[in-house]
Length: 166
Image 1 (tube, helix red, strand yellow):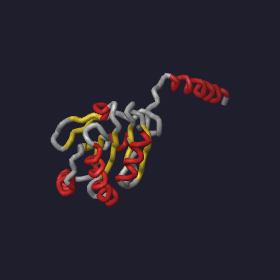
Image 2 (cartoon, rainbow, N blue to C red; image 1 turned 30 degrees about the vertical axis):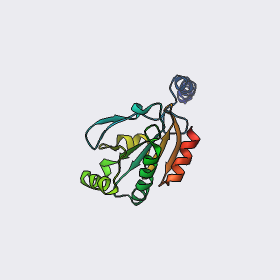
Image 3 (cartoon, rainbow, N blue to C red; image 1 turned 135 degrees about the vertical axis):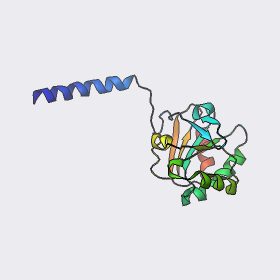
Image 4 (spheres, rainbow, N blue to C red; image 1 turned 30 degrees about the horizontal axis):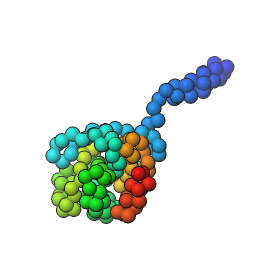
């Protein structure tokens, strides 16, 4: 029994020491947003880190998801209003839960012009803990998470969060 107490005590002492040298990463406000690289619909590789220095909205969605469907026109309006130097929207389709033909048809029907990235293995969906769709993560210019939003958003909401990040 004393051995277990000693092991527990050692672990209690070591865990904080190990954590001190680790960067503040993870899916929480103020943490560094996990980087990822995914293919877009044209097969180009796109990384979150490509946009360091700009505010980014990582939006995890699926074409069959009713709240995602209602949100996409709002995100398109934000994208059009943002201009070349404004908010970058990276729409990460949870392709492991979706169908490529449905995704392409949805993007064409909605006339979406922001990057649509394909999370074919679900790695980004897992890393960003997107158990509910849509899940949106606002990443500031330094690569830190400003806000995590679960559920659909309006153009006005997105624009207000972007103003907070400036």
